[in-house]
Length: 442
Image (tube, rainbow, N blue to C red; front, side, top):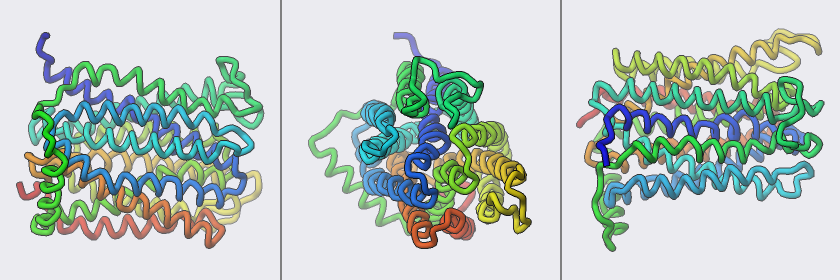
């Protein structure tokens, strides 16, 4: 078999971001989340339900991510794990088709959504851990940024296809004024529910270049003592973690700021649907705006990362997102930043579109730089385990943040007040970043 070039391996790695992004874009944020609100009716109840579902999936990820990472570092063969979690991704995403009006199958659909989310996150752990194998320490920032930007473009294309050909408005038409294609019935919301099968098909098709071109340089043979050895190594890593002050501080910082960002993505669509009474199509347009700015600034963030390092990029992005988290509380159908508006005013919509653009821009740069910073902080010999810990740090509050949003929303009955925990999470992440060394300790 011909040797696969370094360029092909990098492009194969990029295709995972392209293939997997629709789960975040279509299901988690801009289509399925708002659709759940339309099924439940009450925005606050829908936001609370969504929070508890995402929180349960996040708890599973938090508990298993570092263990799986340690096993992969001990046994090698990360591609086998990616295959396994890809199956979860495909089965889970396809299963959200069952969320028909009437809510008879809503619990089943939410369980399938959680299975797909877990599969997507676990597959991401193993692909992220391959980043150091793709270039030098100086090159990985640019590679990471280009990968995020490429993924955003894939998510944008999938969202445009979904809005123009499948997702129906309350009038039963797609964004371009046609009936959902393939004979899908708008009366039973089949066009919108097709978001699940479309996401699954998208992943299966576009993961082909990844599996053709990406190779895992770690090829140790599995051992019967694999799990025991992995757990021993993980325990040793956790005990020594406080001794690595910079890595410890970075994991703590990212635990808060990344999950605040995930909270924005997770609840942005359902928030707009409940507070501004947007349809799935309106939320989708909001998503297009956010994805375009996200792709541009992930690319620009990668260039800035290459020039000045990831820490300044992360710091600026967190500051911007903290201001956004404060701002969204003051945008509603009745007022914008304390200024009352009339029932037919478009000012709340314009303000929220602008907010979406800023979230996309700062979020794209932040996610790209965070992945690079983890490579700088981690032990090169334990990279998959490090990204397992990174996932643990990201998911430790990814169940706390949704649960807290769900609880605050349920207690106050207000979607606007319900998202206020995000402000505190960003602030804590910014404070902990002070103790992070830009180049790590290895």
